[in-house]
Image (tube, rainbow, N blue to C red; front, top):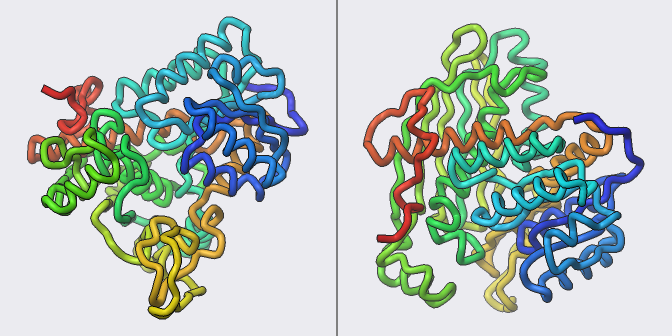
Length: 414
């Protein structure tokens, strides 16, 4: 879609939870944008979100009690879908209907990772966006992480140009578990940690392996191999802990999702060279907080990053007491001792540059680096990994059997 350049992009948020507030913090570092509306189910959450917008100086945000009201507002140009996984396709259907009917003037939509819970849902998200003529962006923040942006630029400009392209990308993301009950429920979330976090790992790895300026489709997936396990949260004491925290619907004695996943993805570049992605994710890591590890290897070089290897560290003795919080790093697990501090989580994790990129592309009518096409490609890889884990063997691409595939942990209850 092309549209005349706008001086300011006015965003409406669908969703007002943890990730929505992370996006808000990042938008402080983005020019030419206002947050003018929010819709989510609970009025008190919308009010808290609108107050945060005002406090951050991001515009005058109106609370809407329906998605239709948000879409019909005359001060909303683009929608950020940040609702839970199980609500995203329904939201996209409403957006499609309102835009196609002419009741909404919204011209762009961005969706948080993962795009959908299954290949069929992801394909429908893409179809609806394109049928409505919407510019669309896939919000995969790790692709825009500051160390990824800088590291890829250096590797491809200085090392790959003289000794050959990179051939192996490793990506790992681990923490002690999600914030909200629905993340832990396979049917609502679409799976467990593989769906929730390996979407990051496979896409940032694929991005690092892709030649700058080349389409993401220039790398063809040949085969995938996956393993899943529940290592921690089915143990009786921890299953009971989940039940106490989130209620009876999160019952890991009877209906667990995986808290560990490993995947290998074999790809082929334009010249027939074989490339590899190795990815691991876990909800069973108890350390200082969220840990992201990235590596990129080539013939005569290597790049590496660890999000907890920070320059700034704080020590607090046993005498320092206080309420539990996450003010030093996301998913912080301790309040005492020697702890790493991320001075700018929104920037390091990629949310600031991600939102800057999306805002500028939508404002100028340009196609973003990450679109719903990429979101669909990620879901295809994830479903291949789930299928591989289920059958105990390799899944080769193209894999038409994945079109209607649903991971075991996401299937309807018997």
